[in-house]
Length: 84
Image (cartoon, rainbow, N blue to C red; front, side, top):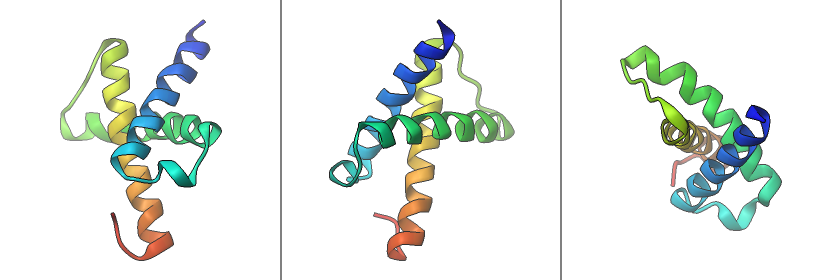
C-alpha cells in the first residue's frame, strides 16, 4: 500500500513541479511520476542536510515537490543552458 501512495504523491508532485517550471507540455504523466519520485528521493536526501524535516503525506508532497523542482531546474540547465 505504501508503494501505491508513493506513486500517487510522486505523480502529484511531479505534475505540480512541471506546472511551476512550465515543462508540462514537454512530458507526459509517466515522466511526471518519475520526476516526482526521483524528486522525492532527492528532496528527502537534501532537505534534512539543511535542517528541514517534514512529516506526514503533506510533508512527503512538499519534499517531493521541492526535489522535483530542483531536478527539473537541473535538467533545464543542461538542456537549454539556463533555468526557466
